[in-house]
Structure formats: structure tokens, C-alpha cells
Length: 407
Length: 123
Image 1 (cartoon, each protein chain N blue to C red):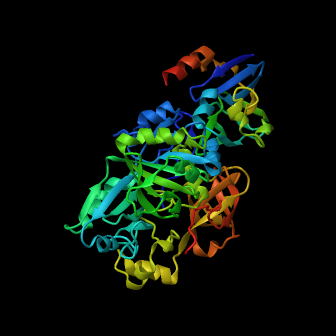
Image 2: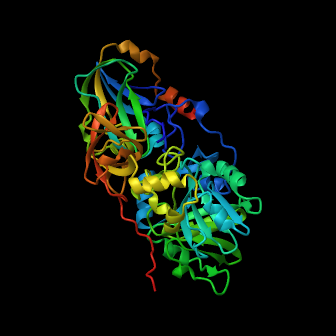
Image 3: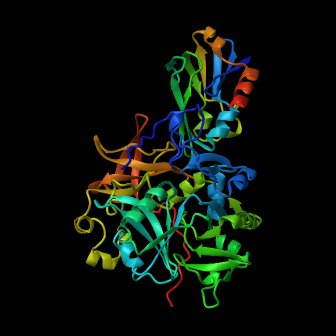
């Protein structure tokens, strides 16, 4: 669990605080991360009225018209998110699947071309260095890693991947996410065609499937995936084409640009962990309730970092578990807040806030396993008040992924 | 009635011995959608600079410091159901609390509207 305390921030210097890694207001100015690089849509965001904040070494749009309005728009229409800060990597070469399997618990050997898996980059103790998506592109594995961790990830991969495996940082590419119930209709209006005649049409792409497409002359890597719980796509596009693509999408009535603030409230409602907060080097996949990321064959064969420890946790259970909680009233509990059962502290909040689609505050946190059954009544301490909380199944808002029926 | 402003972006509107306190339009704009306001208790004795209220937005909790010392006489009960009043009408219906001033000389160090506007423009 992270140590980051949900300190109450002074109004001054009035920079909104975000779980997204932007320091609290109470932190000194010097702790605000420097902006070292500019994303390809930087000017585009400013033109569209974004408030920019430093995040992961970039200036990023935290909001345009307001977090709640943007959140609700995405749940009802389609939101366009710039996630170009994330790391896009390719791993290729003979034995690439096995090389990745030595570092992550996914079954990449069995991952078919055009399929995506959520997986975890693990350290030798079973701590989570990052969570990521791995796509089999046929000729290479395509990885999307978190922006704040991408340089560490690249270092780790370079150190531990065998020499004959090629690691490429696709830093000439931007990444957009189009999310919401109208995302598919919106993207269809752009008239994408499969890059190769025998490949899947866009309408046939199911959740966690990906393919190469052409938007006129512009090549796009399209994945049906996202971080909101809604149907939607993540679109890898050359940096020089991203302004045209963002313009074309936002020209549609159902699409508006959405900032990082709503991205965070949407993912929280979807029960999806945020790296650096809900999962860290100090959390293991089992406590994090991400056991689904450990593929069946890998459970049988092991061979990933700290496999013995993690398989032991899978078999015997972990001491603590990441759970969701709904909170009575309107006061939010945030990262660092202590969770109590009676007088005894039994856990800590790792992220939380007001959930616009739930209409009240929700939180995620680690709790001793005997207090993790849904319906368990707990208390969360916020500013010396005890808030009543109830352990709740996640997601808080049902996922609406586009899952294809098996033929 | 005279209105004064603080560098922490609170305002206080003073009418005789009674001051009404809120956060400025600039502050609400910076904080974004406000979802909850924790108010001081009526009868609380407060000292200038104390954190007496917390404004919770979607992503952040921010302290509000009382610009003057005195006794809290009223908290804005309308904010319990409509915390968004702090966004929509920060300098009128979205007021936070009323305080009976114990030392009117504390107002002397605060800014007037023109000085506050210049201060915000400098940020």
C-alpha cells in the first residue's frame, strides 16, 4: 500500500489535487513534478479549453468543462481521452512470448494474434512493477504501460529480456481512447477499413481484440479496450496524425474531449486499480484481487517472478485484499484514510472520491481478509470523523464491454 | 457592507459586527465540481487562520481558513443538499458561515476587491 496520505490541502496555491499523481496542494511547490516533454496534442487541449496539470512528466488535461459533466458524458455518449503519456512498446524476436512469460504471469504463448491480455510486470518478490496490456500483433507483442512507470519499465525490460529479443519504444505514436456507449457508432463514422483484406472489420472487433486499420491513408492500431468500464477503443496513431484524428472524432456530435479527472472517477467506478495507488511494488497480485491475470497454464507451470510465493497466496489466500466500499453521506474518503472495524484498524484506503454515476462517495482499499465479505460494515476515518462504509462488490457501475458471443 | 479578501481565496462580507465568509469565484473555479462542504458548528469559537471548514471537490479536499476571529453564529444549511451552490453562486448563496467578529482590527490586513483582483491576475 502506498504511504500517500490524503492530506487536506490549503486553498492556496490552488492547484487541484488528483489521485493521478499530481501532488496535494499541501505539498511544497518544489515537489510538483517538472514538465519535461510536450505531448502531441498539447496545443489542441489548450484550444479546447483544458486546464493543464503536470502528470508523468507531461502537461496533461485534467478537465475541460468540469469533471462531473465529462464523467456523465462518457457514461451516456462517447468521450475522447488523450493517453499519449502512456508507454507504447513492441517486443519481438524468436521466443518473445517465453521471454515475456519470464517477467509476467500471462499465457502469451497461447495468446492468439489480434487478442489482448491484461497482465502484470512483477519483481522478484512478486511485487507489482506495473500493470499493462499485451496484444499479440502477429509479428510482435505490443505493450501499453503506464506513463508514470514507462521509463522504469523500459529499463527493467532491457535488463531482463534476452539479447535476441528486440524492445522498441514506439515514441513516435500518440494514443487516444474513445470510450462510452456511443463510441462504436462514432468510430464507425470515420469509415476505417482493415489494413489487410483478410482482417477483422471494426464492427467485428470484440472486447480485448485488436487489429490494424486504415483511416484513409492513416494507419491506426485499434484495440477494443479501455479504462472506464464502458465499450470503447484505444487507438494508436502516429503523432503527426493525432490532431487530425482528434479533430475528426470531436467533430461528431456524440464525442467530447474528456480529461484525466473524469478518467479517474470513471475507472474508480469500474473497480479498476490505478498503478502507484491501488497497486504498487508493495502489493502482490493476489492481495490486489488480480488473480485473473495469472493464466491457468501459468498457475500449473509457474516460471514467472516469485511464482512460488504467488501460487502459495493463490492456494492459501492473502492476509489482505483490495475491496470496494460505498460510504454513507457525502464526505469522501481518499488515499491514506484508515479503515476500522470497531476500534481496530483493519485497512487503508488506496483511492476514493465522489462517484458521479453512483451519486455518492466510494473507495477502494486493502482490508484484512476476514473483513472483506460484501456487506461487511466498516468505518473510515476522515478528518477525525468516522464514516460508515460497506464492503461492496466491484465494479460499482456495471461494465458494458462489447463481448462477442462465441460462435 | 464591505467585502474583504484573503490570499487563501476566502471572502468576508462585514455588516456591523457580523461577517459572512465564503470562497471566491476564482477558488471554486480552481477546485472544480464541489460535492460536499464540511461546515463549522454554530457557537464554535474560532481564531483567525484556523481551518474551520473543508470544501470537497470531486478530486480534492481543501481547507477554508477563517479570515477573522470570533464566534460562528450560523452555517449555511442549504449546502448540505446543494453543495454545488459554492460553484454556481460562490459569492452569494454559496456562503459558508457567519461569524461574530471579536476583533474588527483583523480586517485591516485583508485585501479589498481591487487588490484581490490584482492578486489573482498575478497568479
